[in-house]
Amino acid sequence: MVHDANHQILLNFTSLLAIVMASVAVIPGLQLVLKLHTDETHGWLEALYARPLSRSRLLVSYVSSALGLSTVAYIGGLAGVIVTGNASLDHVQDGISTAEFWQTIAAQLPMIWVFLALGVGLVGWVPRIKALSWGYLALGFIAVYMGGLLQLPTWVQRLAPTGWMPRVPVHAVNWTTFSWMVALSVLVLFLGWLSYHRRDLQLR
Image (cartoon, rainbow, N blue to C red; front, side, top):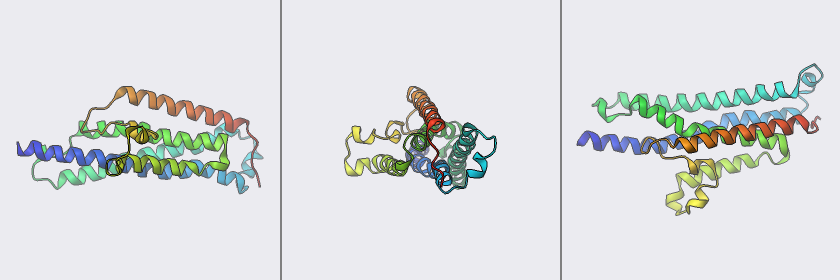
């Protein structure tokens, strides 16, 4: 009975920690995505564009690196905390299991991808307002992390992707939400690529 109670406390803590770490993991990837436009306006890409290098290949190099960086940062960061936490426990059954760990990872990854896809969309559509992606990330973090304390209504919390993800591992992964958020990120990435491919370059 005591072990079950201890385990439940850890599940609740991990579900909140997962949201915090996922939000933090978005930051380096989003910085890399937005750096594409910064490099463009500073003239650092002129030498590349002068060569037979397509915009698509350049965009993919930035975006794939950003997606990989944020994904690895999230998995590695959460794994480090959970492994360290489990090692400090006196009883193994109190800790987070491998299955619960991967469920937690799966629950938050689509949220990370949607934020990065939005950054790509802004760089492609309206790069002048790309800084709004930081405000949107802050809104999502505050709405979920402090939503209860601020007594924010559900519709406000769901203005950002963070508000749609279930509190895993306290709850099970919602695979329907997982699927449509992955589809949304792919769609926004495609539209961002299409817009970037067609818009005028803003070279110095």
